[in-house]
Image 1 (cartoon, rainbow, N blue to C red):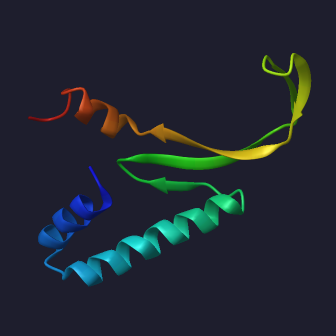
Image 2 (image 1 turned 120 degrees about the vertical axis):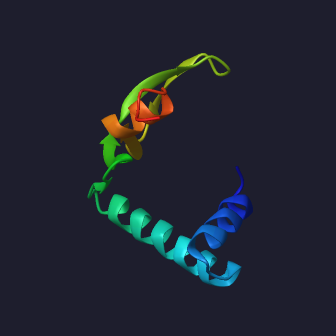
Length: 95
């Protein structure tokens, strides 16, 4: 599903214009990005939680140059689904 498809569906469900929906969406994504960049987690009840962690520097083999190289530390984002979401997508929820 593309961003425009998500925005269209949200605008219909929320009875908002496309522009209002896009502003809401962009604000949400911006806020989530800011929290994760500060190493703070974010939980959406019934959906899951996002958290960032720093992957430490490590060595890796580069087959093209046939030598070891250092991979710098970097932040990675992890998502853990809630049990509610897991049940819903596996058809175990109330039907």
